[in-house]
Length: 163
Image 1 (cartoon, helix red, strand yellow):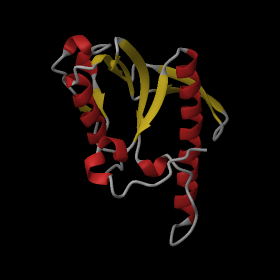
Image 2: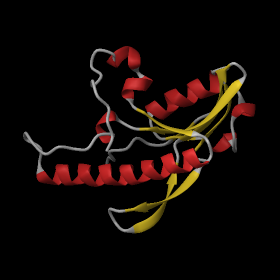
Image 3: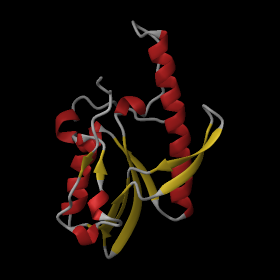
């Protein structure tokens, strides 16, 4: 039976000293995450980075439960002029970063599943943003438009609002 999610794979960094955590346990859950891991590992601007090593408590309004959000990535990097920044990074398809719309030939079941995913993501991202701001960090979401901007420049949506 096939799953809609790819099989997690181990990632081995070349710059082990830059990884915050156990470098033998780095797991990539998608080719997009692997691409970002390679960049974080080789970029001279990155001082430290980690994968799923920041855990943020949040309240899931879709099932009224307190849950834990394992951030995809944490990075600490140089931004110039001797300054550094800490950032929490989520990697997601753009389609999951905007509220779903019902229409066309979309089945009701598909729309309901997309709506639940949207709500869960929204709850997580609000908690992550609050967590980051409380520490003077930044929270960002990277989609295919940021990860593969050479392929998507012409097709990028004009507006990227999240409600």
